[in-house]
Image (cartoon, rainbow, N blue to C red; front, side, top):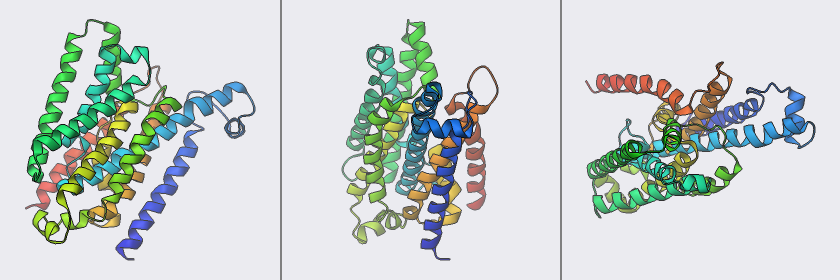
Length: 333
C-alpha cells in the first residue's frame, strides 16, 4: 500500500468512525431516550421534550465538539509541520492563551452579560490581534526559532493578563464564570455559537489545508524549501492566521481545551507516514473523534456535577505528553 493509499484510507476510516460516534452520541445523555424517540425527534415530530433535547441540546453540542476537535487537530498538525517540532501545538505561538484572554475580558467587563455572542467575538478578535503582533515581533524574514520565542512571549503575557483579571475581579459571579469557562466545556452551547464561530473555523481550515503542498518542502529545512520555490513568509502567515482563525473560533465557544492539537497528529502519523502535508486532514478527523468521545464521557459519567471537558482532555493528554517527551529523548540517542 502506498503512502497516498494510507492517507486516504486513514482519513476515510477516521471519518467513518466520527460519523458513527456522532450518531451514537445522540442517544447518550442524562435523559434516557430510545432509538425511536431520537429518530422521531430528529424529524421534528413526537414528544416536544424529546425534540428539544435532541435538536436544541445534543445536536449542537455534538456538532460543535466535532468542529472544535477538528480545528485543534488540524491546527496542531499544521503548526508541528511549520515549526518542524512534534511537541508543538496551537498554544506554542500564543493562539489559545490570546483567545482565552479575549473571552475573559468579555466576562470581566460585563460584555458577556449584555450579549451572549460577546465571548466568541472577543476571543476571535484577540487571537487575530495576537497573531498580528506575532508577525510584527518576528519581523519580515523570521526564523522558526524567532516565531517560537515571540509566540511564547505572547502566550506568557496573555496568561499573566488573564490571571490579573481574575485577581482583580471583585464580582464573585464573574470570577466564577471566568474559572468555569477556562476549564473548557461544550455544555449549554447552542446554534448561536455554532453559526458565529463556524465561519471563522471554516476559513481557518481552508487556509491550513491549502498549505499542505508546501509543508513537505519545509521539512527539509528553510534553505532547502526556499530553493524549491516555497515562499516561506507567505507560508508562515498562511499557517499562523489559519490556526488563529480555527483555534480562536474553537476556544471562543468551548473554552480552554488542551492537548487535542498535540495528541491527534501523533495518533495518525504512523498510518500516513511522516509527510506533514498528508497529516493534516487525518489529524482533523482524529481531533474531532477524540473530542466527541471525550464529551460523551463527561456526559455519561455518573455524578451530580458534570466534569469539565478541558479537565478530561488534560488528564488524558498530560500522560501522553510525558510519554512523548521520553520517547523523543530515547529516539535521539
